[in-house]
Image (tube, rainbow, N blue to C red; front, side, top):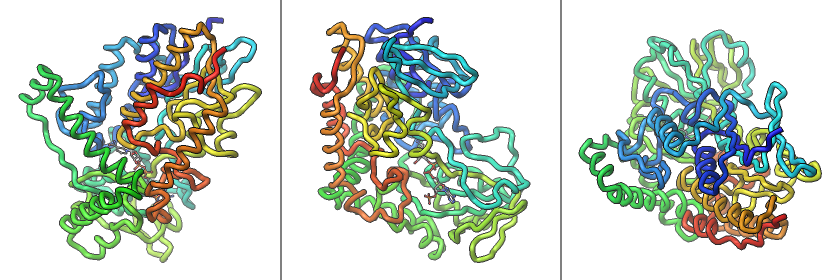
Length: 492
Ligand code: NAP
């Protein structure tokens, strides 16, 4: 059986970036396995009304493949999907992709020095390297609410949007008020007869400086790419201050964090008329404990006569309604689940990964501590790069995450090639030192110093540790990706 140079699992922006990097390293026998029917990852799966990027597009894109033609400062979701296709074609990585291919598991074969990847249906394939790019938010969470299966109307999770659904005149409920709901609710509310929004935890929302990008500016970006690079640098700098410094360096930059809270509260005061609704929409935890978002249209939706915010917990769902714990019943015919994703039980890793000596990655993480050297490598797992790991996510954007990981791959695989080695594996010593350093860095963060107890944030794992974000600056992540000690890995 052929042994491919590498198997990449996932054809989203992570998998595309990894394939581009492997090409640059001279590795062309790749296979990219994708569960969905097309590339684009989250931007293929999510098609709900209002879907848009909520990080400025000049920042939310590969720095080496700028797109001068984003129609808005925050591009609509469909443009992200087109951009993914454009980059995959430009860098000629689409030819490696196999769609509708669900990976069940992967196991390191010590004798053959390769990974065996198990595909649903029984097929097996082999590759010298395994790279998982399965995303952070790819396993939808279905709420465990009594009676939900008895609901007789339409049920729709935001990741499985039905383009043909006609919402006109319906009585709907949306469960959840995360970043997805914040985009969706203002779009669907005007069509509905009634909308009840079930909020368990309020979200921090700051103003969104959005707008169309005039064509002449797009032409300027295309003609003089430096101009767009300047915009990217400024936008990234602002985001880094808010999302990274204010959150991860909370102890030092509390003033910044409090400033953003004040901005968000003023936004709420200006946009929502009813004081009781305002009170309910006010988060009771520090900014940054959970993923905040940006919107100018979410809050005003609660001024509409057909929209109601419900904060009494849901007791059960009946065939034609939702009953809250105070006994009140709301009749509905459509139930929208904006209930997010399961990260820590179902997505780290997204399928069974078994390394040397039968070491099971999921068990190692869940029964021990979530950890990955520089957010990419785990001892006991040779020739394995896990792009969606604990401590891998740069709070700034998914693209700074993947690009720093591409840089790490360049240094690591380049060294393996220079040595003529067949395998790499991170050492226990380097992994432990990195974990200790990240644990120490978290001491400065809002997760430790802020008030996060009520936030119910997916940044925290089931052990109560905030192990998703890399608690360093983005610059530090890039610097280390290009300079980590080469002997942090063993080569053979
Ligand atoms: P999310 O942030 O995890 O929000 C899920 C929501 O559902 C929360 O409000 C949660 O309440 C609620 N929920 C879950 N189970 C529930 C239950 N059993 N009963 C009542 N409420 C329940 O998910 P999301 O909104 O889909 O967003 C996920 C992430 O995707 C975002 O944080 C963001 O990173 C990303 N995103 C990005 C964009 C973009 O434009 N770039 C757009 C959308 C989403 P609790 O908070 O109380 O748990």
